[in-house]
Amino acid sequence: MATTPSSKMNQIYIGIGALAVVGALYYMNTKKEAANTNTTFTQGSKEGAAPQVKVVPEEIDKLTLRAKDKPEIVLEKKDGNWTMAAPTAGAKVQKSAVDDLLNGLKGLTFKERIATGANQFAAYELDEGKGIHVVATKAGAPIVDLWLGATKSRGQMARLGNDAVGNVWSVTGVSSWTFDKAPKDVREKKIWDLSRDNITTIELKDAKGGFVFTKNESAAGDAGATDASAGDAGVKAAWSGTLDGKPIAGLDAAKVDDLLSAFTLGGVLNADDFGDGKSDAETGLKSPEATVLSFKGKDGVAQKITLGKSDGTKRYALREGDSTVYLLAESPSGWAEAGVDKFVPAPTAGDAGDAGTDAKK
Image 1 (cartoon, rainbow, N blue to C red):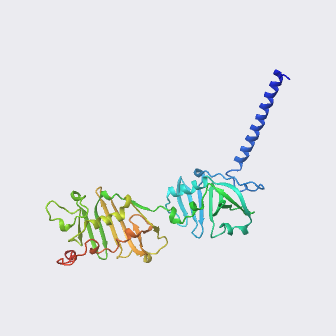
Image 2: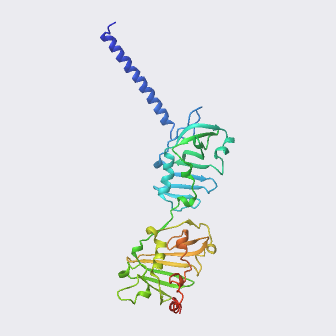
Image 3: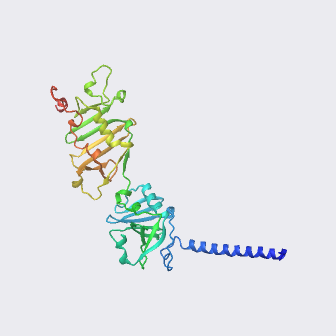
């Protein structure tokens, strides 16, 4: 049978109508999905439906994190800047660390229901003491309240914090490793920026005496030159030094470079940890036996730091102008309580006299 023009038009109209219906259904479904994001946790209330969570990092203004047996961390954004509210109120935090945490939630997607009931949490490391609890808040309302547990064959295990039913889900786009943090992992550890090439004078004072090391700019490239070689024609030590005002005979300039490197590695000095809540007696930072170091630059700017008692291989430290008690790593800590033998090589057998005798007189 031949197709008439009117029947063709009818087919076109039917096709257009079908497309309109499909478009309307798609619009309604998209609108419904959008309504289910950035809401508090009614997302999983529909039987069988996976929660729909959308985290926009720029909108979050409070982040609470409790990783296993570590102290709870509370971070808040005020006037566009993040700071720590707990456990150390007012402590500076690393912006990059906060960005990593927030971006770590951005791709969160709930995939498959694994189990139901609080009695199942332990099997997936989603209970207190094993799971990692993360709450991201916007203007006082939680955008996501998430527990992260073990990684199983079906993926990262998770649950919602206020899900009364206690569903266990596999999720993608997020990893428990990102949030397994202690307070020191998010705090600002930089103590100072310090270019070693700018330093011309180092002062070190402790119970063993007062050292002053001065850089000889004309010999800056002669690493390893010593005061003992200063009398040689055309040779000058890279550093000269005194102890309590007297020249240090046999000074090894490379040792002074080592001291400088310990406090300027990569142009910065970073803390390894913090000594919050420690008393002066515990840190030794107010003791007359504490080590005080000052690094002075060509531009006249000086950085000063006090090293106190040790805590294992680390030492408590206090930078001038900063009330934060830091714990320094082993390398800079090793320069506390330095004696002249730290800078003068031990004499070899048969050498006449003691290489540090003049400095000790």
